Length: 109
Image (cartoon, rainbow, N blue to C red):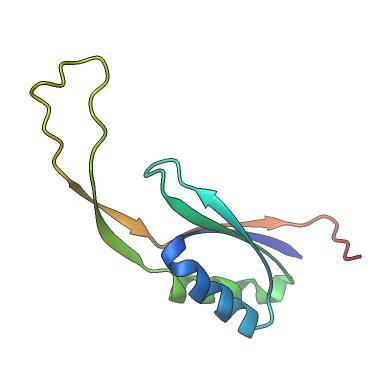
């Protein structure tokens, strides 16, 4: 048995949840916040048998696409802000960060 932790962008979360449920995966959806952009993410906890891990990873990959987004940089700390002009910076967001962990014991009450 494996536990899949998948951190995805909020924009992809509903589509991913629906496709996982349509494929009979048991899913727990948690709201989370990313550390880099400080924006909303969704973390999925998916417990599954070893032979179904590849199918879950395929569904995550197909439904969580990366995209470019403009963000305003944070102003410099401690320096003069008189000459600081924040220009938006384009960064790649989205996709999925996935961890597959072994499960030693599993109980369902």
